[in-house]
Image 1 (cartoon, one colour):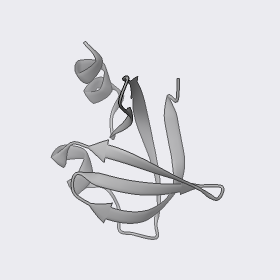
Image 2 (cartoon, rainbow, N blue to C red):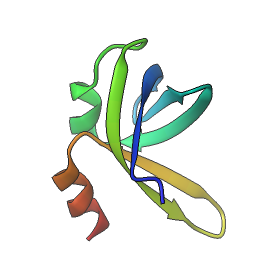
Image 3 (cartoon, rainbow, N blue to C red):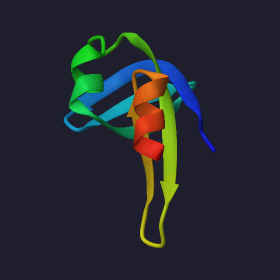
Image 4 (cartoon, one colour):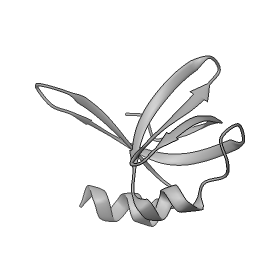
Length: 74
């Protein structure tokens, strides 16, 4: 499980963002609450994450706060 990512925001295209973590670009889907609270492209960010694996996709979701992730998982 990927529980948290910290790195530089490379792109924002709602509802998706891309975070560069040591040269690897992670694409995360975020809520609008999280998206509007994020710093600008090029700045550092740390997000809690939840990885969902399905037959047809691996989906990584990003959350600004732990309780937002907890609500999503339940």
